[in-house]
Amino acid sequence: MSAHSVCAETCHQCMDACLALIPHCLAHCVKTGQPADPAHIGTLMDCAEICASAHSFLHRGSPQHAAVCAACATVCDACAACCAELGLEDAPTKACAAACKACADSCRKMARH
Image (cartoon, rainbow, N blue to C red; front, side, top):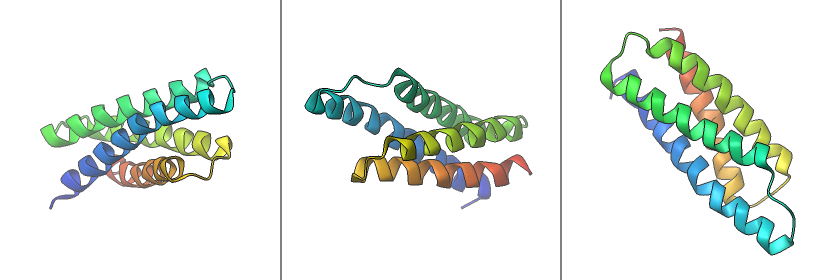
């Protein structure tokens, strides 16, 4: 598998983890009676979107992939930090944070190529 394909797959996994965490967070808020944090939900949505874009740029072999990957790494870092700030120690939140960290690392490497 090429480096582009590996990074694209990492982006796809991160997108999936972020999208899966949104309803999980909303359900947690309903269960606990706490309001949903619009900033956190927005960060998850932003991360899913930039990961989808990076995935597409990488699979298409776009010469602009480095710029998109650099942006993706920045957003993924922010999303991982946001997940950590929630203080939830459940599997979906941990999985999302881990996926974001892995994607940020992979995209940083691709941004240098």
